[in-house]
Amino acid sequence: MKRRRFLQKMTLGAAGMSSAVTMATSSGSLRVGRPGCGNANLPPGNHMPPPRPNPIAVATYSFWRFKKDLRLSMEECIDQAAAMGFDGLDLLHRQMHKEDDAYLQSLKRRALVNGLDLCGLSIHQGFVSPDAEVRDKNVMHTIYCLELCYKLGIPCLRLNTGRWGTTRSFTQLMKDRGIELPLPGHTDEDAYSWVID
Image (cartoon, rainbow, N blue to C red; front, top):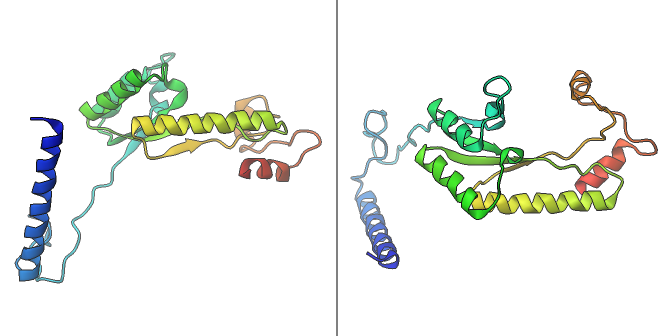
């Protein structure tokens, strides 16, 4: 069957089911709910939505050092997340070793086969810089990553706004609770303005 014909039949079938449900509802004979949920036998007009599961996702970063001194590939992260029973996966852009369309499609397929939603893409960039060219470069990187989200079917992008970079040690930065001194001659208000722009 050709794809167009298949889609036409599916559309007609969905329209037919919709009208059947409407007729059943207007006659008062339809009950909403799943069997065993306690709301399938409520009188008409007292419909409760069926309970929704609480899907849990994990970030591929959590698997990057799954074993000591081992960085798993994105494909292995997908497999591990599925094997552990997660519902979704947040991809870390820095873990992707390729970005061509064939690779992106292979990740989508692997997630689909494993029953995982690709729910987020985490990216790195920084807008906290007095140099407008640096900020523009990071804006372009963000736009590029939005396109990656689109190609992967990912609905959510997580990004860093940046930091001053005056604390060289990440361990020290964590001890300081992420608080850094501004670059000489600048203030935190400057940084807020750059990030907002």
